[in-house]
Length: 277
Image (cartoon, rainbow, N blue to C red):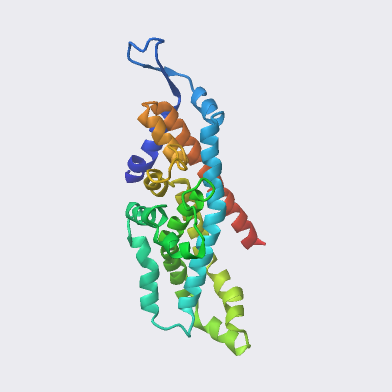
């Protein structure tokens, strides 16, 4: 019942609203009316260059940021899990701490670090004649990716590290007796055995990429126009909502949800095919 109320009902209502079109009279003197037209909003979305660009931007973001983040998370988990590691509890805590910072607060903090007038990073690099335009049109997407990577690497590391703890010690000891190096044990034993955790974190990251909103929204005010109101699909849907075009906002949300579902299912099928072979 909770699942129906919290997940299926809102999705069903969004699909329902997306099937209507908001009609206004030419003079705008009367209240707009809702007219049933099941295809118009979807055709408009797929022909809207701003919305398509936001989808492509988020796709590029995910293709680059997700592998980098999960690669860092896996490397951290393997380092902390290694027998020679010291102060494991300290490094687990410090790696996880950025996740404990709310996304909006983290984005505000990084906006200060990115700002052209107050960036301490550029202040340190200025004597070298180097200035990094963090919020330029060419770099702002990767500045956002840096914030997301900083905030979520530790969360994914904890999931992968927990999976590493479940590997039977006998397997690792047998590999060491056979003369396997630490690198070979990590690559040939540990990483394959935490495959379910890697798949889980990848799917979570795909979904999180589609929901990208807090970081670009906070940076928008200091971006100098590099981040517009339709920078991501969620921001585009909010912009349509602010314009009181709820059916179109619902249609873009449904499109995004379907695309995320397709990507997640495709990823599952690809990874399952690899394990079956």
